[in-house]
Image (cartoon, rainbow, N blue to C red):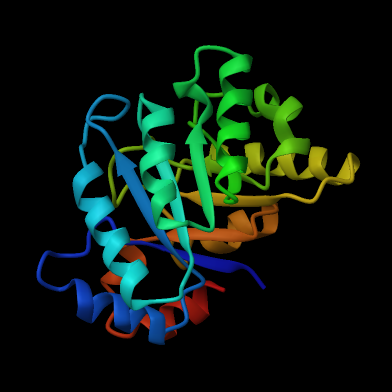
Length: 218
């Protein structure tokens, strides 16, 4: 059974407590924190996501799944690590070279969080293979990062299959997470390809019953 990481990107101001408690009651596995800086992606959610994540940390034991879509990766790792997230994922494309990727992996390790690397749709998955033995999670963006409510790019299913094949052939223990356009129609396709963590925001938050939609996605 896959795990569900609920994106809180579109949670409305003033509705935080009600929504977060309802998601906890519905047994989401993670709260997915979409951190954007207005530079790496167009939208800026940095302050809002830090506030929401801080609030969740005070009221809930559900683990935080922090997804950094930022240029200044080190600064964001340092700041969001104060919230003791379960996992911190940074973008491969935000790094100028392999050495920088390694530096961020080691930095997250010092904070005792699990380590994730995310790739945009146009990035060849083979580029991150060398880092797989040192991380816990690959977050495959199935849409262009930076906006909610997009439609899943179907080519990404093949990318996930290729990654899953490589992981299995090399006996690696690593999660594959899919983020973007995940709903009841697309979830079976990415699960079959090898994904074991689904990020969903819009599909869950527009539902009348969070538990029903989360159970169906699983």
